[in-house]
View 1 (cartoon, protein in one colour):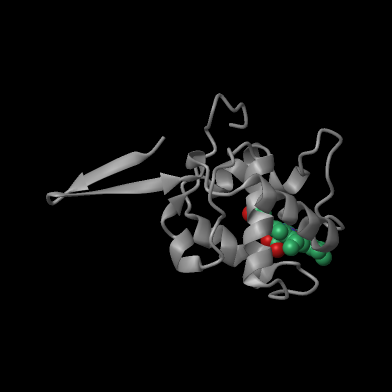
View 2 (cartoon, protein in one colour):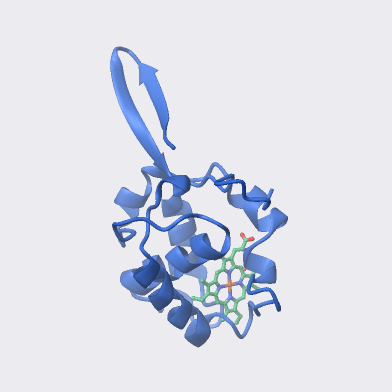
Length: 133
Ligand code: HEC
């Protein structure tokens, strides 16, 4: 589902994380990045979610932001013990994984590892009957 903004005679379509903006394979690579660089401080819960990076508080904090902001948060400040050590690709992959565990659907194309392209994608967790919020 997309939101269409119409203004000054021009229509642009803004994509959201409900539109399938990463692939299953990418999220799988992101899970491996997560296991290597993140899980020590962001442990998984028994149901597969990650306490600090999923659930209502996380969802509320990031909702309506655009993905470049989450990308920059991760690529510039995480892992907290080695900031800015992830490659752009690894950061994009791990974000695909975070989107997946927060209930966003996978799609056909990978998430870009370029911040400018991620600025076009708005975070929208309320997808497919998700009960996250
Ligand atoms: C050495 C511990 C440590 C590691 C490793 C680590 N983090 Fe964090 N992370 C934190 C702490 C502490 C915070 C919250 C405090 C802060 O704002 O920095 C945080 C905050 C975050 C946030 C913001 C959460 C929010 O609610 O806004 C994200 C996203 C995040 N981490 C992702 C990651 C990812 C992805 C990795 C792996 C690439 C990672 N972190 C690795 C300690 C860590």
